[in-house]
Amino acid sequence: MDVRRFGRLRASGMSWAEIGRETGCDWRTVRKYLEPEAPTGPPRRVGRTHPEKVIAPYTGLIDAWLVKEPRPRGTVIHQRLVAEHGFAHSYQRVKMYLAEARGRLNPVAPELHRRFEVLPGAQAQVDWGDEGVIETPTGPLHVYSFHMTLSFSRDPFCLFTTSQDLTSFWETHVAAFRHFGGVPASILYDRTKTVVRRHVGRGEEVPLHREAIAMASHYGFAIHVAAPYRPQAKGRVERQVDVVRHGVLMGRDFDSPESMQLAYDAWLPWRRAQAHRTHGEVIALRAEADRAGLLPLPLSDDHVTERHLRSVAKDCLVSFEASLYSVPWRSDRRPMRVELRVRAGEVQIFSLTGELLAAHARASTRGTWVVEEAHWEGLPDGRSSASLVHELAAPLRPEAEFLGARSLAAAVSVAARPLSDYEALAVAI
Image (cartoon, rainbow, N blue to C red; front, side, top):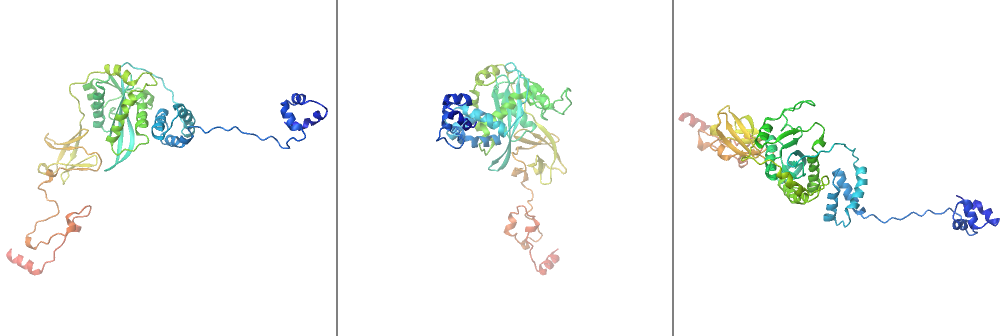
């Protein structure tokens, strides 16, 4: 409002207070702009100054974490800021910043679901986590995490593996049962091929894998299969996959699955000492009732064995999962078929009559040669050949001792002999 337009009121003898009531301004403001030495320009807006937020020096680091992992836990971020970056303020500061940053960097539509509860020992949920490729001293290695969570207490189990095949899947179950000290009454799964034999339509009975039926029968648990495209049905273990990934793996480098397992084992007591936000109790205390309700372990473990038919190649090697395993050459009969019996850490090779031919440790990476030298003992190695005239044979060049990826013929040295030698040989014959 231009107060100067009311200058005539002052000239007519009105007081500052009367002019202020007429203009709707404070009388001090009227006097400031109607006095002879009043400023000629409009008033300058003075903005309020805010002190720098305590979270400001760490926003770049938090934003980088949010870009890499869209939904990290605020408690984990606060814990790492305190332990590794010297943050000396409360979790509330981190929580307030995350509320703004998550929506700005990773907007996620809300998902609705109905919550349910179970009795102690009544249910466990199982899921896989894909942890990507890590660099090891022997090369890149793809690592997966197997998770089993007791539904009543949210007591977790995690095991890092390099395979998701049938034998690895059920061997991790055996390790989980030993960890919990018992077997849950039922286990909830995705429609994974290690549990479900084939996919069927909604509402139809799901045919189960025969090895899944055998394991359930041996240990006494029931198999439940979640509805398709409904991860909320087993949200307890789905959440646990994220908790482990953010609390153990995020922002750290590992060179082997064993180092990842050690990091998880060191973190697990801290996790079990926390009060779960859903049931409000300490996980370890609530787990006592959960484990007490589990079924007892059987007297012996059941180990799943995969069976495959393979042909033995001319070099006495059998191919399985892009790796090669040796068999004794003296037992090889051309052509020859064998049966492979595969467990989580072992490959056994049997003849079709049931004779054990060889047993090898299972290759951890594809393309590995698993060869026992005794299986090849007595076979020609391709680096020497018989000759009728031994004294005339020329020695191989040194580079022919190890050919690598080159052809054998390219490294064989050819001797130059005079014709008289051949004539003498012909007369002798």
